[in-house]
Length: 239
Image 1 (cartoon, rainbow, N blue to C red):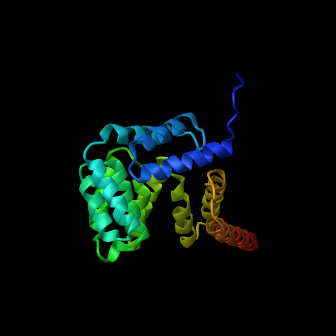
Image 2 (image 1 turned 90 degrees about the vertical axis):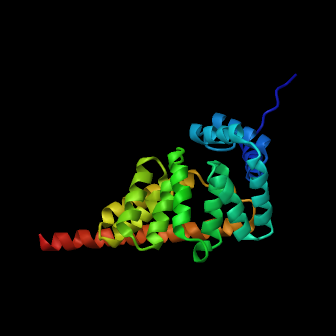
Image 3 (image 1 turned 60 degrees about the vertical axis):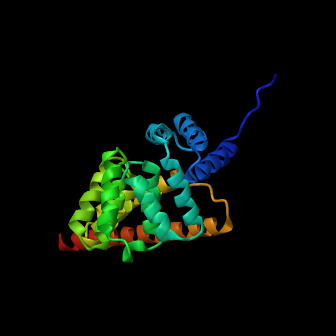
């Protein structure tokens, strides 16, 4: 019997479907998602993400109902109820609930009704459980509070741990403090990584959003490039 070839595109679509099912709280989807992360089919290979998915399966108990209930509230656009439902599971250490909690907080502007201190507690739990991506979110919250030194220290630690999202805010920080050479270097790294890991765009809206984001990034890149050129010329004049 001839073995059927499955294209990379099909694997990418399959991964997306499992990912959405996992977000809805289906344990079987987490298992398939973990397998794809493990072998690097449909998504960039990641032992960490595979382990996190397997970890959730191992932890699945009665809290799975709370996680599904939280998703129901989210789909009904009752974001505050979704937040507090996830909070119950979050403080028990369930990572999917913690991630969803942070996502709801950041995308639905709940900072007016939820004190940032509560989110920081959850982010600290995430980091202690080995999820270094929480460092970026901590940096973002401190940035919103105008605590620049603290936010930059978290961005730097997050970058050291391998989360390349931190390149963009650090680039902006270095630009602000006139270190244009380093700002440009970080921006270049960020754009390269973003192009490498660009997700599939299923809708026209997502494609338009990607184009707009890329345009803004390249605008920042060339602005930094010309600033560097100007600074170089000024130095030569002085000499």
